[in-house]
Image (cartoon, rainbow, N blue to C red; front, top):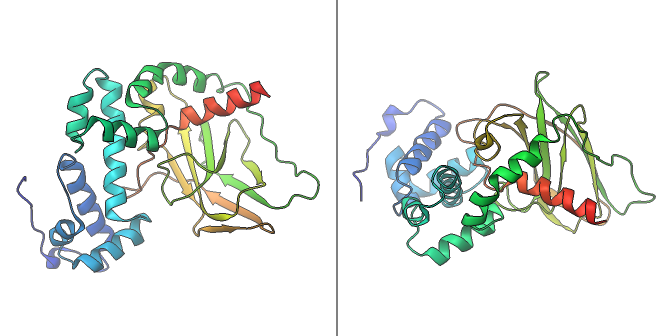
Length: 274
């Protein structure tokens, strides 16, 4: 194992859980190929394991283990865009020793196998850009007597130009397909979800600016982020109106692992089939 750097608690500022979380995340990024435990990270920032896990989840919304897993998948995505033929090297660099495990986890979280992700990136990039000047259809009208509905109203910085993604996710991190979701473009900032399966969900949003560089649609660490502050309990009588302000990313925001361009492509294909 690489040498661990110790940080004494006295080096941390008052109310320092954000700083401690950022230190832990930076260590994770530098040691993706190793087994990193919450106990090690807690020692690094000078907290007990219990207290560290609690403050980390308070800052990021997820556990250190979930965050590390997301970082590995995100690093794998970025490496595949640069060197798609070096699958084994990429797999080892993010801590996987089994090709089968790597392929399974990558497809589970990103939505495609590693090879297919690399092979389809150019096609998905072109599909994204066709909506820079073509409006996406988004139904903001309610069907008659809906059993349930969630009305989402998004707010972005005035100068934002790009695609907005919003969805209900089973976990407080976009590391798999949402239960329901949609994409908005141009001046559209509203959507309505109906007939959602009962459960507990997290409303997460992202704003991807238009770009001529394909990597910018898959490496999403600089895109706008937003979320509804509380988990949403959905049942047959749920009627909810939420307002979400999208902002610039923070250093401790969890990675956006799911392949958002793929979700848009699949949504388009479903509509065309109907």
